[in-house]
Image (cartoon, rainbow, N blue to C red; front, side, top):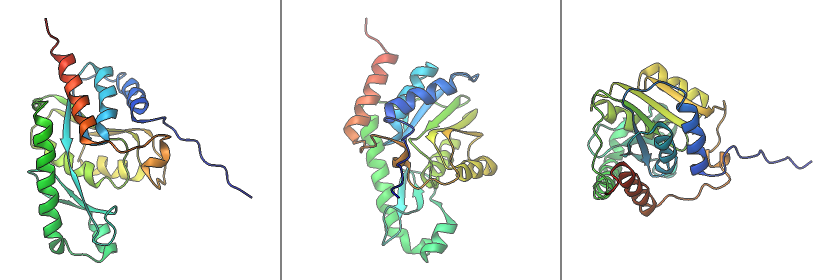
Length: 226
């Protein structure tokens, strides 16, 4: 018997952002800022920023993959923050964090390159004493989100919410419990999440050029000309 394919929850990142923004708009916010986790989180975050009438900015965290399986995230790093390791994944991969020093340095450098390029079109939005919504297109292991959240905390936001269209329920619960975010919002929260891409009909790559275009459009909207 041929199994029926599960219907995708979202058409694409833009639709996901619109729906996530509608959900978040029902909450009370104090001078909110929306950060999209580059790259795929930025198109989603654009819809959230529009819904909340909030400025849009970008956060960058780079995954540190397993030596033989680069897509398997063992940790993540930002341009200037500490490495966030997933101890359980390190144990399963039989890899010591010290053995990944070259990968950490490489990904930290790439995070810095990305951030510098984005800052050419969008200066950083201050987040101190403000509510911040960090948005990604999905939450699986949460390793990159944790790295971005740890870095974000250093800038003294008032309240931090991680918001995603789809996120594994166990990961969301763990991030709440450890206090990486004050809350986690997921429109869809399955117990088992094989891959974030399965929940979208269109889940193409988000290139730097698209991130730059979204950020530039947001800055023009925030600062309209005469």
